[in-house]
Image (cartoon, rainbow, N blue to C red; front, side, top):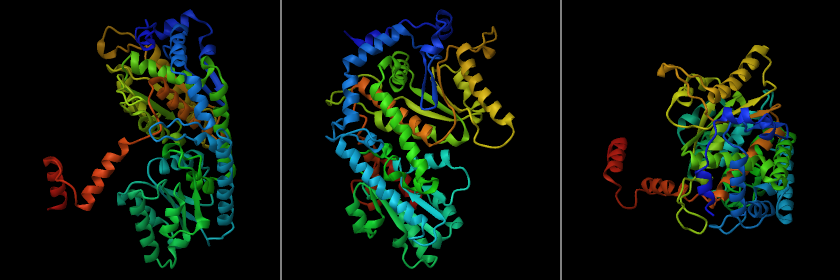
Length: 497
């Protein structure tokens, strides 16, 4: 049986009609886990379509793939290794879980030493990384900071000096800790920034900048060669991909700034989602249901993008985080056996924050010609002490947008006609703390994994990232063959050759 054909030829019922036909729809498509409510009822998912996806999942051995992921079996076929981010949260091969626990104790000991003044007076932290080595820690810091942290922390990823220079102007070099986060400990952008920060420290009279560097890497021997003392090298496993690495020592700067208890809560929340993902039946499994919706709109409805809007300023980096997670994981064109993938892989992930986005991009969502599934995120408890009107208005705007997308508003005037029947998912957190953020991020990881398994692709390699970096390296070194005429013109124009 062609399971994809059954899904793609599904006769769709309008969302409002699905509500009219089923008084229990919100109950059947609403799920709660770890203080987060997931509402899938404003999608076109229904029992008939769900059954088709369950048959596809069985055909793709999704249950076996989940067990392989969460027990430390090889799931990264192109690199012949497991993907062990769940081991950082306590689920995986026993030896890997024990190793992760040991490394976390080592990280905690270094945090305690820094707090006690072992590296001198520290007030500022510059975290240098790129990709998952920067975006994950930055998201944690943005989402969970409360404003009275002991350390001021800046995460720098871009090699544009406009990102780094203002931080150097603001920080005191004598009270600054440098954190270099690089899985390979060879990342060109990260080390260009690192050399600039070290030069700045020396210019400011710091006699031993290397005495205030912490390295986060899967290649500790390279950090040693670079001149960093072993006591300030925090390793993590090579089987953890960069975009899945915030649970490991890559989260050190966030744990140091926010407190190790907050980081432990983050891990605990993720572990709760791991347990749910491994044990819940697929018709009740939140990441699985989310992926079923993703694939329906991606494959059957031809949706090329999915939008994420966080109605909470603290989560403003979440769309960017999910963008990297999904597009780097599932932006593939071949199956695990190397044969062509004859359907779409990852959609384009984009988004922003409410209510700003309502006055910018929602015109396209309500009246544009493209179908654009939308994801709304909101938090019941506010993260501020201003008047109630601020948060009440924020939440009601979030709920209203989802309702308006679904119901629409017909008019004989085409300019004022809102067709409706536009799908959305709403994710509502009771409050925003380490536990709930951990569960939310683990949900997105597992959802990404399920999407890959349904398609039959490998979400754990990212060879496509390398080509542009290799080309840039060749240009920087001035070697290699001459580039195309356009690139040569741009290069010559920029550098007045």
